[in-house]
Amino acid sequence: MKRLFILFVFLLLPAFAPSAVTSVQDSADLTLQSAQQQSKTSHFTTVSPAEAKQLIETRKDILLVDIREPDELKEGAIAGSELIPLLDIVKGRREVPQDKPILLICAVGGRSLALGKLMSKYGWPEIYNLRGGISAWKKAGLPVIY
Image (tube, rainbow, N blue to C red; front, side, top):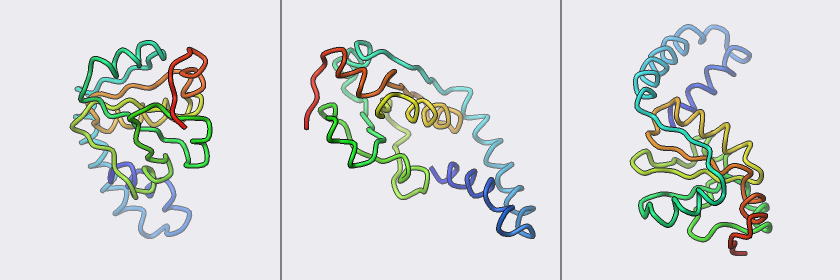
């Protein structure tokens, strides 16, 4: 997650401190090289609600990460999911473990798709994105908790 933060800092820093760009750029280059080496073994897949349900039932080690904001939980959540808002992940306030398969969940699948691609690029070995998010899960008639 620190690598994601470094990448965001690298992208924003030139606007605020042009003299610091060189050292941050060198650090970011090293981080990107490391991430490229790690991403060769990463697996990222978007799955349907039915496929996600099957993963949850068969992969007892899978971590369900709901990246929505707390106020979005009024729409329901998948039992066993852990709320880790996207903004908390991006800002480095919360980390997503790299030693477990991860199923990312958001409202309609866009945020989780973007984060999943980024996590895969930066070395998380096994990431799944719930296509259509919690909306598609509910539309498929799958259970939610409130």
